[in-house]
Structure formats: structure tokens, C-alpha cells
Amino acid sequence: MTTAAEGASKPLTRNEQLKLAIPTLAGGIAATLADTQAACFSADDEQFLKFHGIYQQDDRDLRKTGKKHILMVRGRIPGGVLTAAQWLVFDRLATQCGNDTLRITTRQSIQFHGVVKDQLGPLMKGINDALVDTLAACGDVNRNVMASPAPADSPVREQVYEDARRVSEALLPVTKAYHAIWIDGVQLNLEDPANLDFVDPLYGKQYLPRKFKTAFVLPPVNDMDVFTNDLGFIGIIENGQLAGYNVTVGGGLGRSHGNDATYARLADVLGFIRPAQLIAAAKAVLTFHRDFGDRTDRKHARLKYVLAERGVEFARKEVEQRAGFHFEAARPYQFTTTGDQLGWQQQVDGQWFLGLFIEMGRVKDTADIRAKTALRKIAEQFPVEFRLSANQNVYLANVSTADRPKIDALLREHGVKTTNQASALQAEALGCPALPTCGLALAESERYLPALVGRLEGLCSEIGLAEQTIKIRMTGCPNGCARPYSAEIGFVGKAPGRYQIWLGASPEGTRLSRLWRDNVKDPEIVNELRPVLTRYATERQSGESFGNWVDRSLWSTAETNPVH
Image (cartoon, rainbow, N blue to C red; front, side, top):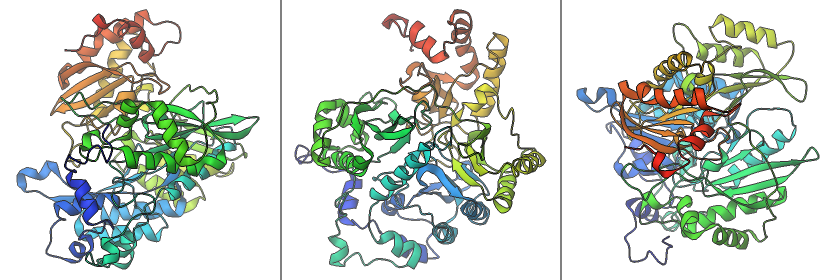
């Protein structure tokens, strides 16, 4: 591990130099926005834009006809909760300023895709006017804080959600650049000593070495995949009350092909804290990453590498010293699933919530399913709360008994099912956007995975695994946005039409998968999986999941690892 002092002889990365030079994160964004002749933002401003929740991209389907710059904009939506009025604003902005779709992310946010430069200002104004923002939705800061969306069977869920909101606010950067650019439309004077010397009171002048992700979960449901986050809080309920949280530190999934020094990692449990210690613990873990993360190599800059190389005891002592208290021993808990509750469920207050399956998280209208229109009409007519899931689905919460049949009828009219919404494989499938918008994608994901799932369903039906739940996830590159390494079957883009296949994660999110095949062509995927799925169908024990069978049968000895 390289600390700031130990790495003094190594050059800082370009990103670190940029943050030091312009610590307000303003760059020349406002000036470029005002310049009608500028087709895109500079390379330096691309990095600053991320701190404002924006990625500059291009439509890769159109590269042969000339590079068309577009922008992706991501909201900061703690716990994934939007009012009906806010959903309506997002729906309208997607039509007016984007590509007429809303993309639910695996971090409980919404992304706008296909935004052109002259629509960026109106889009950002509309988001902020709705009392939502995009600050720190990307960049070397704490990202959108996640919390389990389902009301489930405990009123504790509302307290956990409020705690997630508090942590989100406590870990926000305070630079005035966001307000200046997107609210006032003013370019900060970068030569002003107050701007040159700006130091964020929490993040310092350089912010974090890399992104930082935080999530809250309530056992037995691990729908946030808490161990894949830099910082996690596992709610512990005792005697019907929230006793506190087990704190997890050091998870992360990003890696690079051909670089064995990069790898996916699950977090360690540091111990238990009381609710009153929450903010101090969150700030302590964040500043621990700030001070010990590697600023000379961005591929080695995540907090997971500090934990892997320094050890959990070192991390615990550092965090305790910064927080001003000692962790208690971790409290017992058990996870049983990472999935969502689709369909109608009753809330603890007697009202209802509806879990709606959204394929690949893309809210849009097609000839058969007009989901975007249906959800807009629901937001117009009913006082429901919209809750986004980390599995790219939508919950409609706080539905009265009287409104339930009306919502059912409206959805049915638009081709949206409320029962039998998806097959077992479809319901568990996650995919990142990948092509054509993501500049990092090496292969397809969102546009390709549904068809592959259909092919795998055919195989499963043939071999006696019809309606068997198997967690399948795909990304177009190894960065892991759709969490393929915590899937029972994970596909990771290697090149156009070629994928790595990872197998064997636990269905509860407590064990990662391992690489099984390294470079499989699209037409060969089903045949490659046929023998292993056939063995599972005949060899599995009663109730044994595919991931657990793989871990028991394929990974039990080194020689059975058939990677090639």
C-alpha cells in the first residue's frame, strides 16, 4: 500500500494533478456551456464533470459517420426514493433533454442518456428545481448512498432510509462550483485566491483517490449487495428495534483484463456501532481512504486494496482513532437473498407496495409494453412514492387499498404485468448499459443479455431446470457496474462478441464467483454452459443453489478449475 508520504517519489496521476490545480472542481465547465460554438467539453473538464454527476460520451453506433458527443447524467437519489412529482419531472426531462428513456442504475439512481450539450443546462436546472441534484453522483467522492427500498415487514426500514439520507448529506463535498455552474450559470474565477486555495473540510484539496460507495441493508435481504461496497451498514434488529449496524469496509468489484494486481473483493466486517455513532463512523472510513489510498495509480486506488494489503486490524484501529470510539463485537445476522419482492405486498402500516420488473432497468415505451407512459400516468393520478432498487426495478409504495385495483388496471392497459412479471432467470438478470453509450464497453450487455437469457431458459427447460432461479449478470467491460462477480453466472465483456464466464457466487451475496472460461464467443456460450448446468440438474442436493453447487463441485479442488 502506498501512503501519501511513501508515494512522494512517484508522480501523481493526471486526475490528482487536476484536483490540486482546481480544487473547486469548476474547471471551465460554465464557460464551455455558454460557448455555442464548442461541440464538447475539454478532456480536463471531462474529469471535473464527473464530480457533477455527468459523463461525456459519444454514440458509438455512429462513429463511422463522425463522432457525435453526448452526455450521460446521473441523479444523486439517496435510498432511491422519489416523490410522484419528482418522477414526473424526470420523465419529462428524459423526453425533452435525453433519449426518451430513464435508466435505473444498480446504485438506485436514474441516468439520462443521449443528452446533447445544449440540453445539459435545461436538464440540470430541471433536476435541481425538483429538489434533487447530481452532485457527487460520480467522481472521486462518496457516490449515491443506497438503502433497501422494500417496506417489507418492519418499520425499521424507514429509520434505515433516514440514516442513509443523513450519511449522504454528511459525506457531500461543499464546493460552491456546483451551485455556481448549474444554478447561477456563472464561471468561477479560477485565479481568485479563495478558489485556488479552496480546501473541502472533509475531503481536503485532492478529494479521494477514487470513487467510494456506501450501502445500507436489512437482513435477511441483501438487495444492495452490501459486501461489494467500500462502506456498508448491516442493520441489526433486536426486540423489534434498530439496535445499530455492523460496519463493513473494503469491498469493490472493478478490475482490469490482463492485470492480476486488480481484482474483485468483498468487504470485511469491522464491528458493531450504535445509531448515534453512524456519521462519525462514515466520516472516519472515508478519511481513512482519503489518507491511505494510492494517488499514483488509479487502478490501485480503491479502498479494497488498502484493506487487502494493510489488513483488517490496521483498518479497524485507524477508523476507531478517527471516529473516537471502539467498535463493539459484530452482532449475528443472516442473509437469505439479494433479490427484489416483485408483485403486490402489504406494508406494515396496512398500505400496499408493488414491485415492478423493469428489464435491464430501462424505463421506456415499446410496441407491447408502454412502461414509461404507465408510470407517468400513475405519478399523475396517485400519491405514490417511487423507490428504485439496486436490481434495476421500481417499487410503487404507499398505495391505498382503494387505489390498488385502479393501478392494476392502468398498468394492464399499458401492457405492464403485476403478476408473473418475469421468468426466474429474467427476474435475476442484471446488465450494464455498455454499447452504444459507454466509452469503456468492450462488448454488448443491455442490448444483448435479454436474448442470451432466453437461450439459457431454453437450455434449462430442456435439462429439467425450468423456473430454477439462477442469478445472472453481465457487463460490457471488467469494471463490474452490474456486479457480475457476485453473480452465480457472470458474463464480462472481453471483446466484441466475446465474454469471460464467471461461476459460483453465493445467492446471498457473501461469496464471489471465479473465472471459469476466459474468452468465449457469443454463439458458443450456451454450449459451454450445457455440461455444467446438466451436471447441476442431476447432482444438486435438495434446495441447493447453482452457485453453491458450483462452489462445492467445481471449485472444491484446484485441479477441477477448468479455466482456459
